[in-house]
Image (cartoon, rainbow, N blue to C red; front, side):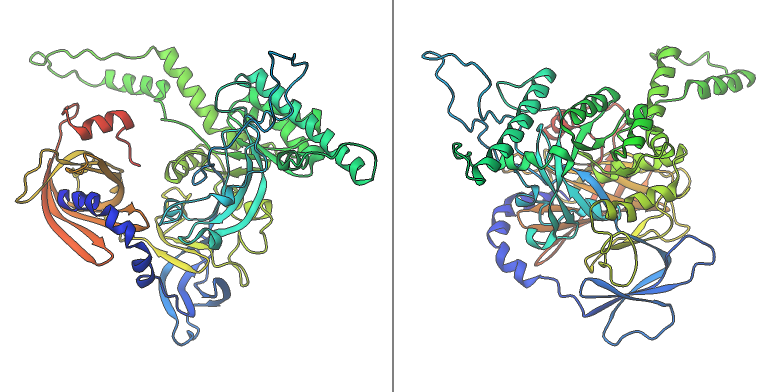
Length: 600
């Protein structure tokens, strides 16, 4: 593993230069017809097996399994698994990075020779409503692969970091050129109480003042333009795309999706909306349930990002455990050295648990109050977002309602109900196939994601497989390549759940540049065998990493494979797991301290 990762660093420039040639050689060729054979469309016990026929990026037919297949079709085995419409991420800020722009669009008054009697004509710090995410959106060579791995076929990429950040873009999650991925280049406007950079505004009061002044300017510009167009003797209005875009928000002609992560911010936005007759939706939505009745009455949607954080222990459960332990006979601890551990006060633990449950139950309370709730990952990784969504479902949120919100209702919200959100003939071929209900008591694994008819397959652990008793791959592993010496060991930082699923990070150092190279990996443990896979992006190329190994206590050995566009390289390796709390000083360790060791 070490040598391939070093090789990636030195080959990065060459790969980038040769991108156009190799991209043409390895361009995927799609068959005329694809058939996903023998899937079910619901979790009902009597659900009939169906074949989904795909042609030209569309679902052209759904037929009972067993009917004759079209000649020349590519057949994908569904194995009786559950097919669901592709999920729609209703709000993510990933993939959108606006180039730096000028914020002072007027000529400032020289205060030495004159006195500023009012606000400037066009100080646009934090105000950029004419910006379009569709013009800059970029998810790299793999496209939105992290979303596909969680069953998402579509996402709403939104600009952020400004009072009026601009328009979002509805985008397919498959890999491809930007022009092929954008379903709608102008979807609503987005904003937040923030404006980066020096100068006014920089406080909440300033943000309010800037927004109010801009909306007044937009009203004035609209009236001025009407008089000028009618031939009245008024000066020619300035050409100002931002004012024109901002005017679309006045009177509720265009939806304004604003970030709010607490109840107080929700209230502030509502007051501003009342003043200028704005039509709002909230993104983030933490604390919105405190205003659930008002939001339902005004029909204001909420897009929840469910940032729950680590689940704190329930002190009431601990008390029950302590009572049970008190009934058990005491162990002889005469030879054991006492170890002191800091324990938080019970009242603090109870408050932390209460606040966490409040965040978890936010979606449930909003839904029960009749608020239209959608779901979006915000600035988080989709895997983390889905994990928190499952926690909310474990807390009582209805799973069927969540599935509907992330498919049919989200498609309707974005004006694409005729193309997305359902598995029917005539719709886009954008759906996923799962081994079971992704929001069930035992969530299923994803087997296929199909976006616009392009197929992405995932490795699925066979039914009944899992780790042997006592086998645990969690921890930090130091990996060495057989027959090679290196000052910096490669690190595998892994977490394993009860079912043997693995997630984590692979890190190594390029000996030439000193750059830390890393990739997210995932896989599973079956018996005592572990398998992992990940993808490194280098310029316009992807290099697949595959790792297999045999676990034996705190040691592991096996093979690592890198799949280049021109072939593969295989290396044997061995590794040991560090004891908990073990420290090393190295470039990788410093990187881990700075960036954390959680799975990417």
